[in-house]
Structures are given as C-alpha cells and as structure tokens.
Length: 290
Image (cartoon, rainbow, N blue to C red; front, top):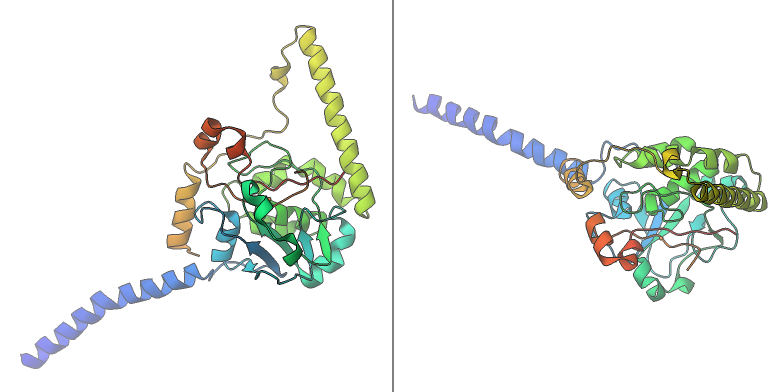
C-alpha cells in the first residue's frame, strides 16, 4: 500500500505540475518572439524611451524580435529614416537596404529638440515621401507615420512589398496602411531614383491642391462636398482597445518641423481631442521630401 501510494502521489505531482512548467516555457518563448516569422533583413531603432511601452510600435516590434535597439553614438550602415536626410528613400536604395537594412528613430515629437542627432544616424539618411498614416492615433493624417509604418514604407518603395506586409501584420490596423496608400506606393515604386520620387510626390500634392480647390468651388455653388467622402479615409475595423491588444500580445505572444522623427503616442485618442495640437503631435513620423 505504501509503495502504491507513493506512485500515486508521484503520478499526481507529475500530472499537476508538469503542465504549468511547460506553459511557462512556452510563455518565455513567446516573449522572445518565438514562432514569429523573422524578416530576412536587418531592422533597428534608436529608442529614447519617451513612449508608453504598451502603445509604442517600435517596442512591440522589439518584443517580437523584429527590431533591435541601437546605442547612443552607434551609427547604422543601412537606410536611416531621419529628419537629417536630404533626399527621399527610392527604389535605387534597394541594394543598401538589402545588404544593411533599415533603421528609425523612436522618440516623442514634443521632445525632438532633446535628440543628439549628431550621435545617431549614418551615411544613408533618407526622408520618406508623402504618405497617409493609418495608425489609431493619427489615422487619415498626412505625414504622421509611426515607426512600423515608416519601416514598411521604406520596404515597399524599395520593392519589398512582402516584407512590408509581414512587419505590418502584427498590428490590427497594419494592412490598412498599404490599402490607403496603394496608389502612392504604385507611383513611387515606378520611380528610379530620389529625384523622380520627389517629382512624383510634388505632382501628387499638386493634384490634392487642385481637388481641394474644386471642392471649395462646389461648396460655393451649394453642393454637399462631403457626399464624396474623405479620400484619406478607409473603413477599418480596429480592435476595441489597441492597448489591450498589445498587452495580450505581451502576455500570450509576449513578445517620428517638417521632415521626420519616429515617435509613439502616450495619449489615447480621447486625450488627443481634449488636449489639442500638442497631443496630436505625439505618435507620429512626419516626413517631407520636397
């Protein structure tokens, strides 16, 4: 009887304690990005810890193992999306990106003056041309991309649409970026160099100005211009709470004046409406390649 009871206790212990251990092991694997498709290219960021980790797209990518952090003073050999860039990223940058990757700057727009730009960056600093943001904080607004949108845009322009789709797939709103900007991406991808990308961007902006003038004229004639809808908007089914989604990812998969800085918002959308333009500037990457 004694030995039998011993075996029963051992079996009970094995049955009831082995599974939690396996669960913890799987959880640790998820937090390190295990099971996530790795990108066949280097991605990096200078993270200044200005943002709420639960809302920061850069930090989420880091949790997934899809991006690495760079130290202050460390330069990057690949394409660097930076306000210090003089020309926009273009299809001619593909060779640089393929070999050395892409990097962004993770900081708050409100604190951009604090960034020691001379101590970060690299030889191939680039702007992004005109795009419409689709992240939850700045959806429908031009220029205001976050980190993952900036990286995805660089991938797509250089001919790596599949990489852009993959890195955006980890956000409930991610694929909308490619949908809303599909015509722009098509135009930029047909360019050959930075000069042609800049021309394509300016032609597009001229078209927007012309469309605006036509809308104003219609309004003056008494037409309801809003019947045409907002062309920057696309209906997207966001998760009920992006923060909760990020927390779930962490638990279960636990794993930004004119040119551009990567940043993430520490305000939710309601706070942005209450606090005005200062809050609106959070959570954006603003680029201009004119």
